[in-house]
Image 1 (cartoon, rainbow, N blue to C red):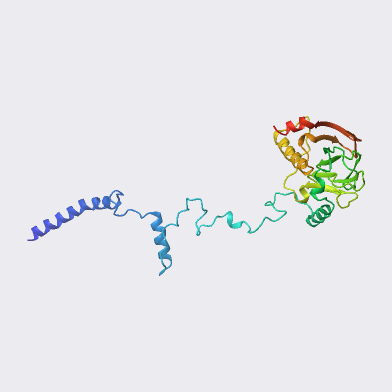
Image 2 (cartoon, rainbow, N blue to C red):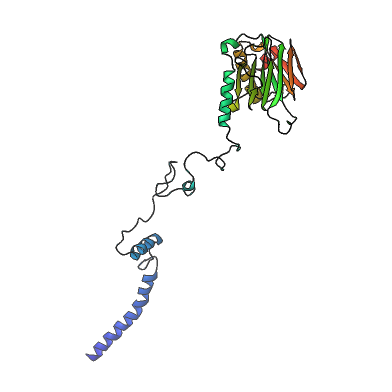
Length: 292
């Protein structure tokens, strides 16, 4: 029996020596996976659960970002949007693209109301002139230090049947002379800057369009010798508005560009000025140009 038992023990020992290497290989081989490591996501979830005993396991991943263009998911706030202040842009910050200036809104409102009080009823303007002069003003000489609006004298006493619309890009103070002195609606203004009348009275103006007083768009100062299609289109749209205001066809209009004037006088069809004339276009030629 002892010999049989000894042989049995020797057989089992030999079998174990052969089986142990195969067991180690099976445990470590990733293809078999007995000891395959858990995915990092599961491991992190498990670690978090184990770190706080009794806690409820969190989802393995957050909801996906929506793909419909509606913005970030509610539980994933946009890191850029989160710091953006609510409400309208604050003046003086990078959100505000405007040039910063003192608040002149109240001043502009008062100027506009005053000018409206000096503007004639449109029924008095239509038919009050036989011809219309648009005069573009360009200034290349700086104003004197401390000076206010540029002074400009407009004399229509020698042309009682003509009306004038000034097109400007700098602030003007206009002194108007007419015959008779109480003539209504002889002057209009179209400007990207503020303007004033040296002597205001009711019915002095035929109307006005100015950016500081609420106009959405005004005519540019057109150079009759050099202009682009956009400039011409905007200018001609304004010309048609003023022609309708005075009840005139476009062929009864004339445009003159004058540089650095302080005085403009109409005598019949002549235009006299202390400035420098830079071009003129009139009548049917101007009407044809504005139809293109």
